[in-house]
Image (cartoon, rainbow, N blue to C red; front, side, top):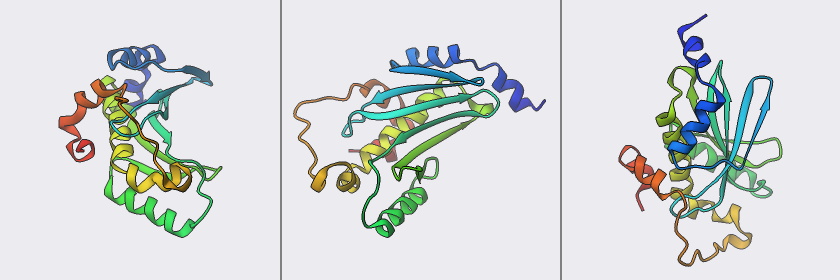
Length: 175
């Protein structure tokens, strides 16, 4: 057994749930199947609110955090796909792709040898930071006519998470 697999075997779903608590996060639900655990969260960036993120733990491989970034892309495919490819180049530690149902997906992976609370928090903060930074470029996908709703005085429910990692992700979390 490789050292990566030995380290990964020590990570259990209970560990990940403890990390969520440590990060001030509360998953909406958990699902388990064939030794793989997945949690659904709804997180807020500083500008983008209610981003649904799934965290999947496969102890043999690692953790993947992914968000359905936008509804299905239905028009101007070439321009939209070029945008996703450009973002993949601009954000090397996160990847955009398109799900089977045509929804853009934003994902951050953590290798089995690097899974811990800090890596999970950093991955989730990275997703929120990217979603915030790209909000203006994405509004035509997110809202009819690209009309962003007025957030009023709403504040991020996950400000503490973003603040915790801001020094390590300044390129993502700048206003």
